[in-house]
View 1 (tube, rainbow, N blue to C red):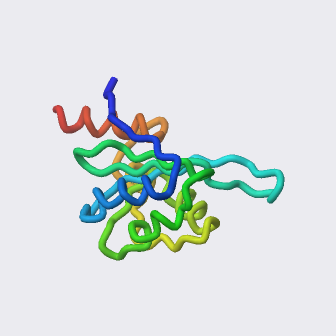
View 2: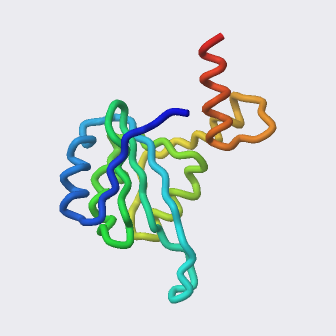
Length: 134
């Protein structure tokens, strides 16, 4: 099992400081976690995970962090954002008032490039690692 360092952030100021470390990256990975809000009768973002090469994963608690803090990254035409099933993550960010710019969908790429019984993120990654090791 691969162990990734991560940092859970629960306030906007700390999030802004942490995100400055990845602003110069041209490629990041992003994933959202959601919950059903019965008050608003829609799904809302509860967590945003952002990863860049050779850095700890930044996990933002969207319940306490103002998501405007990720706007410079997700709306940048300079930063490529990789997400597995990106359409979902883009839709969730749009519902939070953001305008995602350059998303690439790793699920779509896996379906185009691999022949697998399932295209889950984990299986797609393991298949690519196996392919590289051959």
